[in-house]
Image (tube, rainbow, N blue to C red; front, side):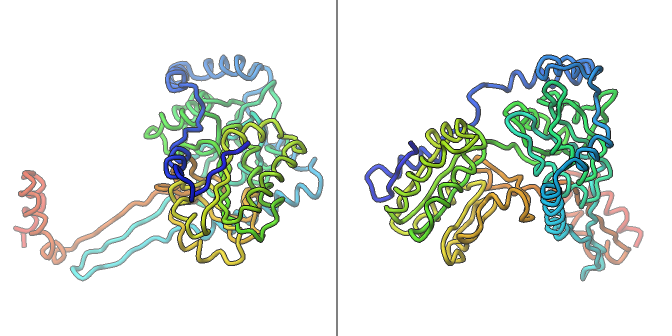
Length: 431
């Protein structure tokens, strides 16, 4: 059964703090293993990748093929049912439209001192996308990661994915076809992340690596940050639902379980000001879990990491929500705007009773790659900007240098950097 808390009860503050601080990442200390894998791939290249693939995925890359040909992706797309193909195409169109609006504008102007100042945005040359191949295949993640890179103008996108037994989910291939990916490698795990970062004889290195993965993949990205850019270090999925007593408890239970079914370490939390709803949602979850194909995972997650929290009123819940800084936040009330105004930390917010988080996973448009583990306090979801960088520029004529140069000389001398001061002062003396 999930944790039950009441903000009016003695000891609530300590119990809630324990919930906020609870670690749900994998218990294994994977850092040492990942360090060894990264070094092995950096030093051994393709031969090491092939060895890890035989060990973990059970097939020989030289026999099954290192790369997936674009024709296989097109065939997978052609083999989809009409409804499923249209769903993927709708998702791609909506994701594209949303991310097109994120493209930043260059700036260029002259200030009052006569200095030309500006910034120019440009895409990275190459991006790597990790697509999981373990518990489930997520074609939606292909679209969510590739489309922002495409919109940014990245010229080369390389996808890596583990292929147990040499097999790859056709939905992933179909999504790759829709997204326009033509470089797909049958490698996964921390070793695939290393190959993207360092490069091998077959796989050219990239500049940015994005995409979800298990603890080893997340740790590999963390260790390689600086060699390459990354989207984030993602942990287990999480959802917080703030709901009043006018909600259908079956809906709210389904919303909570939509995250519980992801992983045994996922977290699902309900805040409500209604005792009857709290009890009804708990009962609805018990009814729904056995009916899920993912029942075993959902049961473990709901019992270990689920929580139902009774508050005096929903406004009281918002500071608690901000402390959790959840990946997903549903405000399941008739008028969510007052509560929304109080949100400071959340990856993505779903407003109103008719906006389940699951619609955001697929077809709404905003990116579903979001910060977890309270990282929404300082980071944002994946966007076009993750695949771009800004270059500032400036230009001074003699008059502009005369206007601001003496201050630069004074500051350089104060910092004890005489060559800095001279590089400006020498130009000023020619006036």
